[in-house]
Length: 329
Image (cartoon, rainbow, N blue to C red; front, side, top):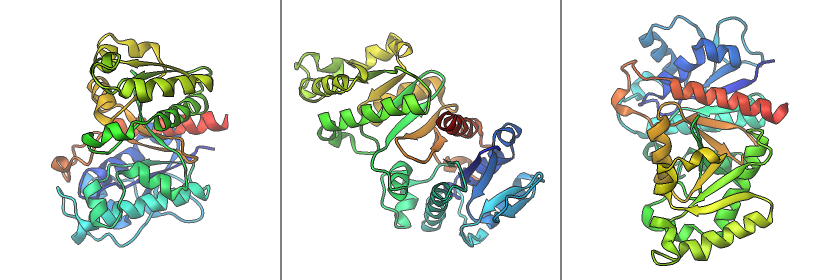
């Protein structure tokens, strides 16, 4: 039996509906899983007509349809009048949020084995009343998960983050020994469970330039990172560092490790996206359910043009299926 993968609409004013639909009908995806689109059927129908896709859509029922039909878990009456390509709105945020809720419920009920989320706008979600830093935190709460770590995965590297969507000025206060140990524990467990790596090695990046240079350029490494590494190692986690981020990536040391723990968003994601943009996958490690997403945003500038690429979405589906198989092998 192929796993059922719930693919959310994302922000309907961006490229979300287009890449979700294109991904669901792609032959490689069809061969791997049974995709179920999650979002307003009317919006997907409009996009389907604009793209001249002949594969029919059908409201998802108790039994998934047979043949070349794409089931849709309809989350409401998202009428075409609500779509305003190119900008975040309350309607687009409400649609994206409702789709996330519905996909989580499908996974929790065992009706889907994983979920892949198309890009959503944080601004639009807030306009609709969803006050979360991002989809990762929202899904963690909805799935009643007590721990989660954002991980970007590509052929080149896997990067986990200690802090995610927070202002840079707040990062040092959030990089604590406890938080670093927590994220290392999640990464270590995920590498074993989800990626089948028996003895994973994790590189930990320093927060300051030159990893603080023994306290000369900041004390975060000596006060937080080094104690965290020692505690993690006492738990038999093979964590090493802290490494100066620039030299670590410049010398390609990342090739010697199974994952990297970065202290903040851009520290880890700039090098990853420089090497793998458009083919990397965002994975929410630590959740009981499986959730992946592409490595890019809503792309409002491309909305409604039918030109959005789906490479990263396809990779997100592939990774979701791989993790499902690894967990149930």
